[in-house]
Image (tube, rainbow, N blue to C red; front, side, top):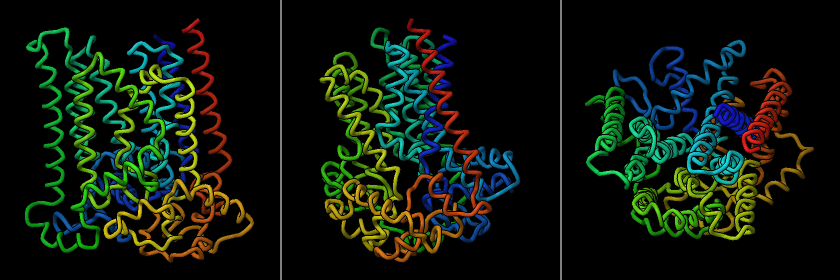
Length: 507
């Protein structure tokens, strides 16, 4: 048992280090900048007021006329820990704080891998197989890309997987504790994105033990529902505190500068997420084929769980398809479906037994290649090159079927163009206010192919250890050599720990 704990610690260390090395090292999206600002206010002032006038996205006047955001709280809470860690590593520096804030998603990715490994081991897989499948759940799926982004989708994915895994793993032993953990995780998922609360259905099904009488199990079901309800109450209370009655006058007018919420044409979104080159599920997550096979395997012994999981996924997808911004741009593939990809990975090891070995290897290999392509180039680049407005999907959602705006199709070309321009030096590092400040909404950035050559982040690789070479030593948020060496050593050390721990336990 001790060796298995050590192996999982090694897995956490390796996944964290690899994902941390894969990211941009800067806040990559305006959503993340707003959530960071809440974290900074919590550290410096003990409140969630938005004080920086340059942070405006999803920010509205609220209590006492002060500025608050409508964004949810969990990523900002994680940001508090990141800021405190950054301040402990040296003099207070905003760039270093931004850099550490981006690592919260890497921590979430590593946590996701450990949850997978723990569940797979409980389901009867060997230590080595459990670790390998857990790593695959990160590196062969879009979870890897979103582990390098300040979008909050990876945090919601972790919460959903933790809730379902806790319910499944505790069915035979400690069901009460499993119900508590599942309920708390569901509450966290709801705080990350409200529609994720629908995954209460598979959680309740996973907690149910068909070998026991229903009456003896209603208590643990009630625990899950009550904890989720309590989390919803906390969510509403926090929202009411920021925006009490009477403070929301004028919000409707302010909302007009954003895209309309409801599309009125969910069929277009469903077709796009199914078949388009811009956001088709199979194109951006080929490994999902193994998960679908796993659903067939689980069906024979877990019909209630499979039905509940399928129903929750269907409801979630229907909700997302009704939004104008169903893809979640600027992003890689169908961003909002990341939690679905993550929870379906629970079924992947079982699915591998149903299909031929070469199919498994091909699906995993394609998944890995797709994710590596995702990490190389900033996703803003393609839309700026094509002169698209930020809300092009409102008036022309059919563009996702056009190869010209498919990240997947254009990524090899983009990589080749970046390689061919390595000797050129851009006028500026980024159109943002500072090197690590969020990339602006693309409506406020010069567009066209010529604009790509003006900003290094658009004409260079996305990895921070390559991108920050453009900056002088004083402008870099961290020491490049020391940071890279530390993370590489952490990844190698974690890998060695896993190898020796599993070799000993399986010998």
